[in-house]
Image (cartoon, rainbow, N blue to C red):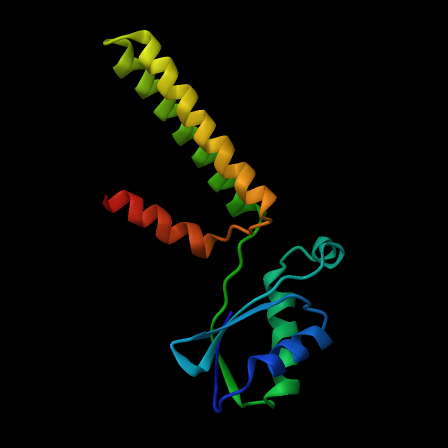
Length: 158
């Protein structure tokens, strides 16, 4: 969620207000100017299960927190985004299809030269994928659509 306040507010005050409304661990960043903030937050899993659309309750909770810390009418919401399980499944399916297609194309191309080279290339690519997923898992990194979208655009232009 991107928010523009009428005056500068310390991020510590915003974080405390978000904690008070139950959005613990929210990520707050200044965006562009010192009165513009990007807030990334999520509801607890039990609350998210009860509500089908998690974006609205989170936006409402952020609104309550901003009303408490900044004051009603002292901010404007520039944009609100939500990434749900449907988007995650789509990305997962497309990624798997791209990986399998790259394996097949690599095998076909390198099999014309030497089949062992094709097999080695597929094994090396699979190793890289597993190592990347393991790194993300061990470091407890969260992957968000806002991060993957620029990466996919960058790789498409190369």
